[in-house]
Figure 1 (cartoon, rainbow, N blue to C red):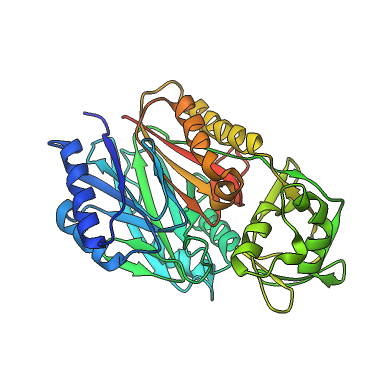
Figure 2 (figure 1 turned 90 degrees about the vertical axis):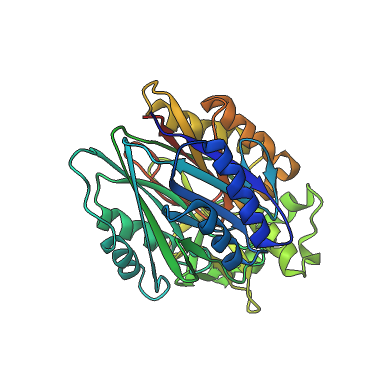
Length: 398
């Protein structure tokens, strides 16, 4: 019997009751199959301790991985401030192992190493090893975590994942692993399988400005661009573009409004193949901007934008890249890591992006969340830490 994946999604004021309800729905769909892996993507609005307690009570001690989010969805629907749950059945063609470590902000490499050290060696009868990496989305160490995982897991291990969110509050994000809920952390799920998984990534951004230079930055905080305060440069460069969609940059005062403006117009770092997008998450009182990962001084960049149609097309293309790797094998399901920036750009049309993915991969179970950053490490793909992208991860049925 091949892999069975079931998904459920819902919302309720009582986190414990919601967890119990979703778990029972998932068990009913699984039938006689036992849970082999539990994925949970939850709005920051919930009591996550009560949520996990009810999920673990109903689903047993199967490995559990998850995080807080900025939006949740399945193949059935997109729901804000909800909980999305996927349960993967036990299957002889797969093995799942999870681990988590804290201290990401201080030393990303040591944090990833500690999590990886708690995981077992690859079984000889499972020739393919893939991983899911979730981490604190506000630690500012997304790039470092990915680079560390690439070295520690080894070049033959492909992985995908995302940065935890907190519904655009930009205050605190959490990662879940079994019974634990941690901030400033990294969680890993190793997936050993008989057949390879598929991973694809794509963004839909294009440059608006000419070349700009990072002249002062410390870690993930950008202070100056071309010798001027970063916020002032963003306002000046994007004033006309923002005006065309009804935004007066001089009237932006509320942190939420500022954050949504910045998320629309992101940094694009040129690479050998295409632009790597970096999202400014928020503004500080001194006019500096906070990013989800380290910004190097001296870097050349352009400020980017993306029409809605390009965002939908990029989601479809990410799914096509992943599907091409499957060699026509039947699919059990998919995990989608989709940036909250795309959710802001698309608004109520975000569902069209999810529908575009399903059109490519078929009517199969799908779970995803809106992230503060996306991860793709796969040979032949635009690998690394990303923003405003779609990352699709496909699971063969056997």
